[in-house]
Image 1 (cartoon, rainbow, N blue to C red):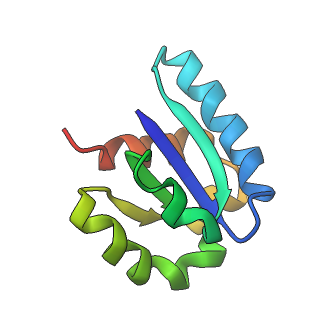
Image 2 (image 1 turned 45 degrees about the vertical axis):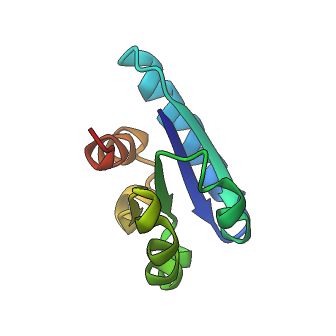
Length: 101
């Protein structure tokens, strides 16, 4: 299971990735979680199972969804409150809920 978070530059999101990884370890989930700048979306989409967008790049959601949908890859925007307060557990829950079965 490969979860990718996209944001403007990949900096603040990397802190959220660390919290998500900690939560995944607590739950004994085998997941790969990475943060990349939104500019790298097209390079990473094939390897991703789910893509979550930071609130600062939500304006890109429609364009990125159009690219990802034909590949069966869900794209969603991270809740601004969960992002701002670095709630790794909530963001992980969102990614897991979007995971294709």
